[in-house]
Length: 151
Image 1: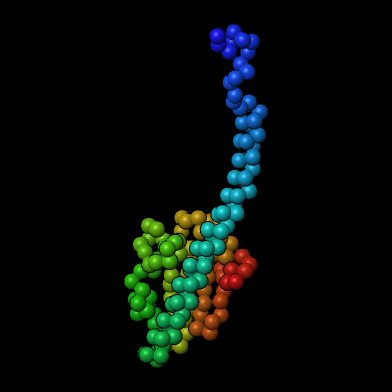
Image 2: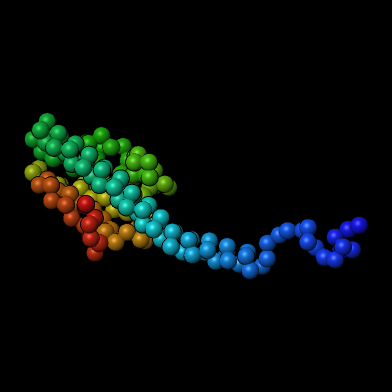
């Protein structure tokens, strides 16, 4: 005899529509709060990569100055074969770049190194700090309106 003949579906278990809707609502709330936090984490970690590369470049500039009695005007003089940095903190091509490095306003005794978020990336769209810069005195600046960018 099947379950229907015995007076109902007592042996069959499952989820009700209400239970499924509650689970969907909980998942939606977690996603609504979790994704922005995750995205901010990615922006901050990419910024840390740019800061690291800028400090490495500044160190190379100082070594170049010690050897040549002047600062370099190009990244190639500092041993960089690319101006683009990817999320693995490696020099890369434009396709996977998150930051573009440059030596701005170089003279014999001064320089400004800049890391600018690559156009068209999430970093360029979402990072309130925008471009990060450091000069020969160690002065650190930003071009955006963010706070705690160099922390």
